[in-house]
Image (cartoon, rainbow, N blue to C red):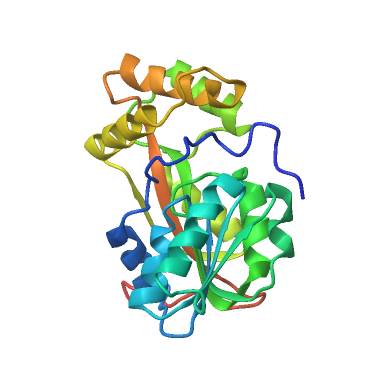
Length: 253
């Protein structure tokens, strides 16, 4: 299944991931009910492989750490080897259109910050890789705040190939894609600004076609005083089976 031409969204090598912190990984592990022996796919592991290492060391999970470029996975392989984690972490380079060929099922799929596919493609790829009651936690751009300027909306619609969604609409998309939506969070203004500063610091000096979209994104962020009405969100959903009854109402009906 081939992604759209404008995917994956450019992410400078070595830059931090939107939800790549240890705390974010631990929150996902708790929601996904991961435990020793749980099999987890970390998609977009990055050159540090932090999420994969934490899941293997702290939770004793069996992890498959994946990224799309050899330059990103080679440092992870070396870190895994040097820390004696080769029995718990398998590191792979996988082409963007070959993710569905990985051997499932997984108890959890974690995408800590690199947006690889359009939203509908992501959900179609993730669901069959999960076992029953398996969770996915993925990063995707979302509208936030009361107002998003039209130039920003136009930029993101062109970049994503679809309108920019609100966080609650991301949860609705999860449900449509065969998941029970469980939670969504987005980066606050200060967190988003810190992310952009780090990503800019890792940009190559020479402009390139691959980074052009991100440079425009960064310019819009600054043009609107670090509050463009769009941020990166992290949504979590549980694989839902055909015919499964909806969860009981939390307000007792």
